[in-house]
Image (cartoon, rainbow, N blue to C red; front, side, top):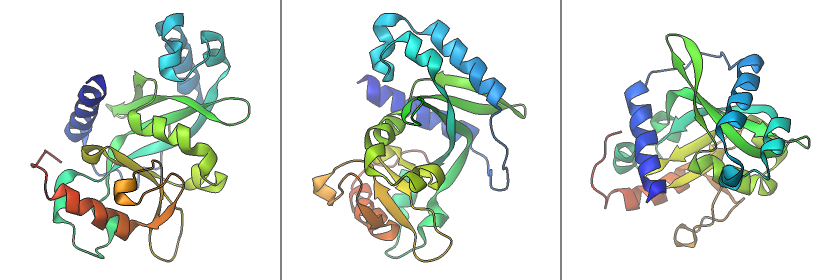
Amino acid sequence: MFKNIYRILFVNFCLCMSINMHGQGDSVSASLINKSIQTFANLVDSPQVKHFGLKSKDQLKTLTGGRQFRTLMIGLYDLQSYQQNQDVKKIIKEYPSREVALVDQQGKIVTSVRFTKKNGQWTAVGYGSTTEFIELRQAQDSIPKTFLVKGNLIRIPALEISFIQVPSTFGPLEFICLQTRKDFNFYKGKRILASEAVWTLAQLAKTMKDLPD
């Protein structure tokens, strides 16, 4: 129940804050990330650490800021309207937030902090990973490191599915599955054409009631 409530709040937050961020190449500063890690450590209690993917509060204090993931989503309405072989890039929407990976000394993702822009400045708004980021953390050993470093995290909140976009400057867009969903023939770490994945999900989306995009 908490997972579903969180997902609704997260999607509604992004909808309210939605802007076109293409061309905004700025990132969250290292000093703000470090300050947010300290705040995170002050907020979390020892009995709660496992809920954040942590072993202890001391471990949290040793983590450093890693990859800054843009918030990219495909909404339910766009899925329902999707036509076979349509360019998937045209239905991926970006929102004014970043989820910053917190990594250990081996570079492994452990947890994250979420930031959004307020009055032109980045502000920490959430501590601990979103559901999609937890799936990314759990799948990271199944994904080539290059894709983790350069690939985008694509979220489809209405269907509780997410992918890593394979970075490429040519050829058809591809995704890597972060979950095993046998009903869709999706397997963790499997590489799939984005158009095929989205077309498969569009069939399910068309059976669902409309939600705000």
